[in-house]
Image 1: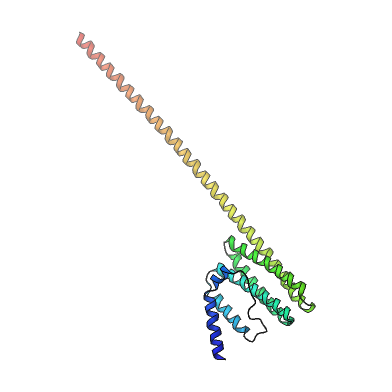
Image 2: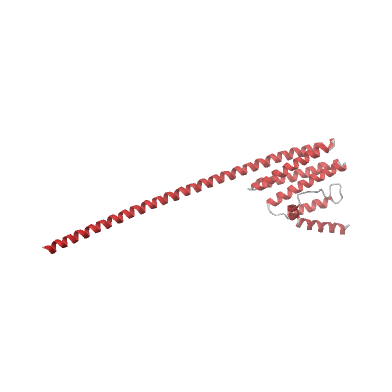
Length: 228
């Protein structure tokens, strides 16, 4: 038993290290170990370790979205197996992942992350609605609650995304105004510099004319003196 657990943990940690590359290449999500497995607690342990060693809020949000998709896949498996008593636990964990991802995304000044959460939540709602159609009556309550939480989360994500877009547009508008004002000031300075140069040239010309006139007067005076 110990050898099996050790092998499982080693393999799980290996998967955890290379998970970001796998997530980028493969968008599909499979349930893997389900809550009816005696080893399901190991899957939960590995996910906690994986989350702990995932750095950066953006990466954590993406990982939480992935975990949410796994919980929905697990719920679907439990419905297919007729083990509806385990569906509620899957959906409760899904809601925890969703709320945590939304909280991280809202605190980030990143439009792209909010967009990813919005897209993921919208996708989750489609999956939940599909589960609702297949689920027996006693499992519908927990699914309907998850749909409600997912819809609220989607609305919050859209609202957060719109706010960030508005802030970005406002900042871009202010930057444009500042650039326009700087250009206007630069143009005015150039014009003022040009006027100064023109005035300086006029003063120099006047001084040169006066000097020329004085020289002519001196020459005329010399000529008169010589003639006498």
